[in-house]
Image (spheres, rainbow, N blue to C red):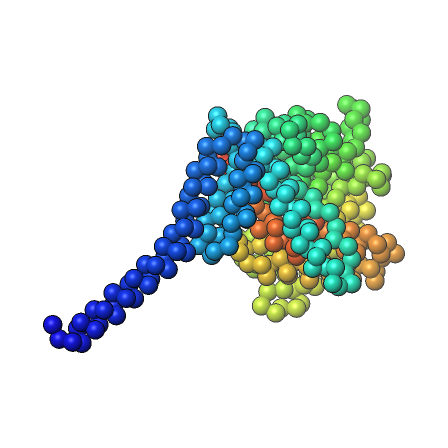
Length: 360
């Protein structure tokens, strides 16, 4: 063979060998380790599940391994019988929340910002049978559940104790306001008192809806107790996607869009005394952290506007004016950016089945 062919052959073989060596030393062990631990996670009992998850967390050193771990961490825990282990899943989420809070506190310690607030875990239980909610209540001390469908929530409310808080995170049509509020309003006929403080509506995005809520509460006679106001979040569309509900926020530098959020919040505070503005909420685009940043900016602008127009300055200042952002895929990132209310569902309860849900 000609000398140049032999040389090229040697170089090609050498390159192939180096690539193969790099793969066997870095990627292959990572994938193998991930696979072995995944097999162990599937076969071990619930009692040792968290230990192995921590082992996975400790091995997040190589990029290839990190990607595998993230996919595995999104799955839920199951018992040896195959049932979803709600308690283990909740404990796993709470551990991650604590870690994210600690990281934020470490970042904040070098600045003059306010102390890091506590974070509320809302277990999103839409489409899930009441038995799983009772399991979360009894075994994992969960006291806040999130629902997307009004009729489903109304059916579940009387089946759990009165110390549960219900967060509604679905769209609310004006003609469904009374149904939404019905489990929480005072009733003279049944002798029940108002318990509006047990409901948090996270998806208010218009003054029309706020006024409907105010009118329904006033009509029922439930709006006279300041200690039992309906807590609401104003939903902000931080991604600019047409598929997402919410008030427009600043997208692509449109600073005037933020005024819409501020004006709505000011109008609610001034016109709807039965409602308590608790904060802002968003459902950002998956993987787009800028959506979370936009909500923080909107919250700060709302706080500034309300503090200059209200005598009750403190209740509209961070952290009392909250941020509801972060779901199963990004709640840790959201906490590090300042979220005080995270909505986690599939990581706790597993995949959803929408076939038998009354979507009303």
